[in-house]
Length: 301
Image 1 (cartoon, rainbow, N blue to C red):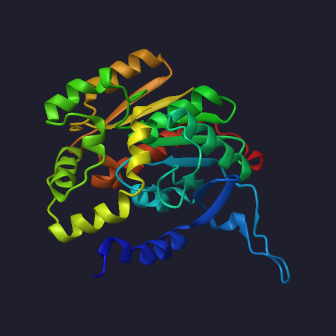
Image 2 (image 1 turned 60 degrees about the vertical axis):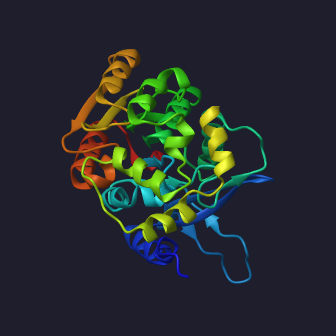
């Protein structure tokens, strides 16, 4: 039987190529491979008789879009890529155990994800970038900024916190009716996926059970490793005002913790998945923040 979510992937590939990005696999080291969507103009096909595809450095300011738990990179950011590629070199990674990215290393921490994401970016010739992180991707982005301040020029974070710990999340989990972060973010049934989507969006969405089942099969692979991941500058907090997972109060508290260089912006009628629910508003806010940054001479990128 056809899996409808898997079947749309060739269409997504074609649309993203039209938007200016295409997939590229980076071997970080033996046993660790990370998939990226990279600007089409940076990929140079091998000349006749050569086997290696060459990657050139980006020629525009770099924006790295880091996904959350519910989907791989390009599915998460499908509405943002085309809005950014005219002025920016956009890179969309699949974090380890998502999409085509895999490792044989036992570490499951956000620090580990950040370290290997940076190694991949370095191999792609990126020296400076703005990181946009959603949910779990926001936690990885915070670690990137902490560990590699020379790389991360600024951040935009949506629906995230500094770290996923039981002490931080237990109140929200109890309020939503879940016993653990894994139960919320890694549903193993159509009922569980419906529950996740119901708290992640402001507008209540309806899809047939068959589509929910297909989504579970395609987007929630490497379940054991992802569950283990949960165990283990200038910042702009761009939030859905109706986020039921990480409420606005968390964002305001985080803004106070992060200091005066952190700004907050709320988007009305948007939930946890605000970048998918209200992409036009989200993109406008994101581009306004990016335009305010002193990213400098693009020839340096």
